[in-house]
Amino acid sequence: MIAVLVLLTAVSPLPTDIYLPAFPQIATDLGASATGIRPTLTTFLVGRVLGQLVIGPRSDGMGRRKPLIVGAAICLLASIATAVVKAMFRSGRTVLSNRNYVGYLVTFCFAFAAMFAYISASPFVLQNILGLSPGTYSLVFGTTSLAIMISAIIATRLAGRVAYRRMPGGGVIALPLTSVALLAVVLTGVSMIPTLVLLFVFQGSVGFIYGNATTLALGEASHRSGTGAAFLGALQFVLGAAVSPLVGLAGDHDARPMGISMAVAAAISAAAFFLLTSNRSASATGTNGQPAQAEAVQAAAR
Image 1 (tube, rainbow, N blue to C red):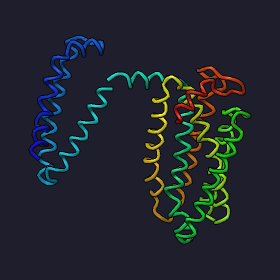
Image 2 (cartoon, rainbow, N blue to C red; image 1 turned 90 degrees about the horizontal axis):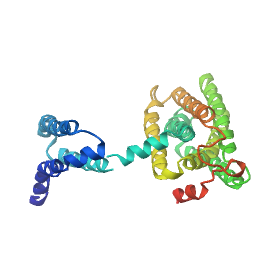
Image 3 (cartoon, helix red, strand yellow; image 1 turned 135 degrees about the vertical axis):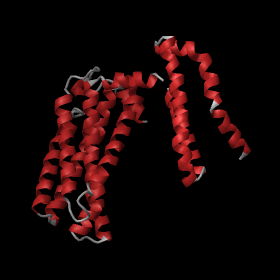
Image 4 (cartoon, one colour; image 1 turned 180 degrees about the vertical axis):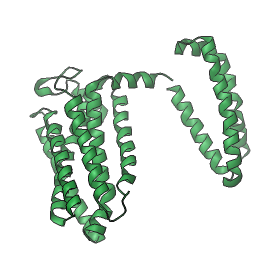
């Protein structure tokens, strides 16, 4: 406990002791004047003041341990983000300035959002509305999920024979069509067979999008593959977290939010693919439209 308190006490003066001597170098690195750098120390001190005023009273009700852990975690993450000042934003700007990359990014992530809308709502839709038992629901969910595996295997077999772009192109056409058909079924009264058939086709469409859109996106970001993969991973889970509560807005016995969320996300995915991407890549392409940086993509996947 004493060691922890000593280290935490050192956190406050240590930044200023290290930070102040580095002012000239910071100004050089950021391309700022000395006048422009000095206010950063002011914001540091303002943060300390506001932090104490906000956290101090809350700790009286919450105790000291939780605010201490949360504060230390935020401090650690902020320090890491600061250290990686400038390179992260430069890489991000380079990747996001590539229209094809952004198109494949949005295509992939909104297809994931459509899938997550189904995943989040399916326990209530299939059990509360269609009346499946928990065991039957598990069986049905697993069976429809096989469609992703089947389509992914087919996509793998077609790789090298068919251009990568054609496979997700077919998927993003089927995805909104299937989602709209499912929404129509939901709005006219959910029935067992049409719902399950459409869900199976829907998941099969997703299987053609995931791997191929990822490959195409990373091919566009071959010189910044780590940054490209980071955006793919972060945005898909941000959208997944956002769509999860939306599908339950109307309660546990209403499938309309699920159908609407799936249809909207699928439409955005398709629009991004056809409006933002093109056959001509910003990076060189090989035969059949395959990204020439295949080795870079494979390295990133590993």
